[in-house]
Image (cartoon, rainbow over all chains, first blue to last red; front, side, top):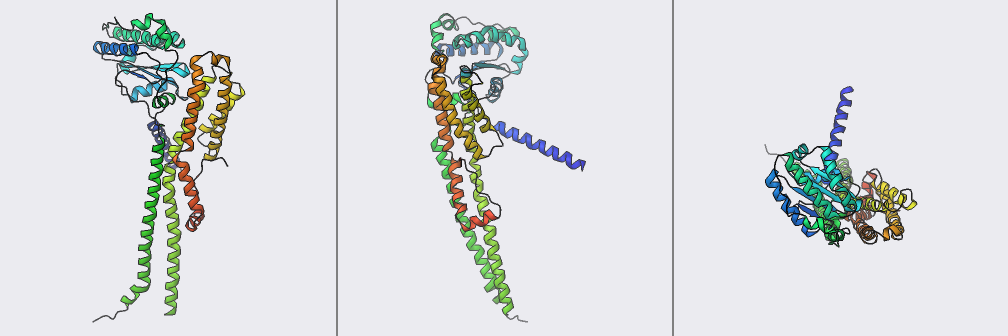
Length: 259
Length: 179
């Protein structure tokens, strides 16, 4: 009796794990960008994006890591840190990489780090970096300034922790001095329908267009028609066998045997 | 001889009845499987509705108290829609209520001074969020499952083999409609 209970509990646990795994697998995230910036909310300036690329290549030479930036309008109820960690995993970023997530419509953000970067920067250092160099301009909606300040200080902290030198000269100059440029980014810019969907919903597998929907329905109707045809043929064969056994098989049995 | 013929005839009738019953059960069960497969598409669309509600609430809480009646209604609709144990009919009702209550909340927000003074939230309230709600609603109503389930039910409810299948426990597909 006890054994049965244990087996039943183990089975239930396995089922729950299976459901969890399948639920996780169903979630989809934005694809890894070509560079280091995925500005789905369209709030970052071009100059900032270029400087982030330059900073990233310098950081790669210094410590082998990159600073990635992802912006979205909303996460649809998903917690920002959980989402950032998951994107870090899905993008297969390396142990020295950092990912900064900005959720514009929710006024929230999160920083996800690879294992080596986490080892190099304590939780206190990370909190201090975000509080000292990011939070205030982010909440003031000066997104370029917020990202520029954090990216520079984060990259320098990572380099310092690994006793490497990182040259940030010539980077982010415009975003630090021009407040009008930063102010211009406080309101998201008009974006395409596809980007709109990607930036509004946490998962990106909802973009099933009407034609996709029609295709699903057509596939279902085709499958149903094929099934009906198969059933009809099967019925004809069954009927033929039944009739053969009932009316014809009997006569062949009665044929006289030769000795 | 007559007895054997009679037995053969009875056996034939039995076989016919058996094959009809078995065929009906198996056929309708098989036909229902792909309908249920399209359910995943509807569930995915419903998730966009839940997320839409979260997004509306994220903006709303910056401008109205969370005890506000309109805010609470949207939050309740969201919870009903998100509840895994709800039937499709319950989810359809929650979805319909969400469309109405979210539109009402956005209307309230639109007339709030703080929204009017905030370029970003004004854009969310007047453009992004209504567009998101409308698109997710359109996709939910147009999901392949709804048509597949309606067609399946129409057929199973209006055929002799469907009647037999229902007697044997093949249930009509749940429809995503408010009755």
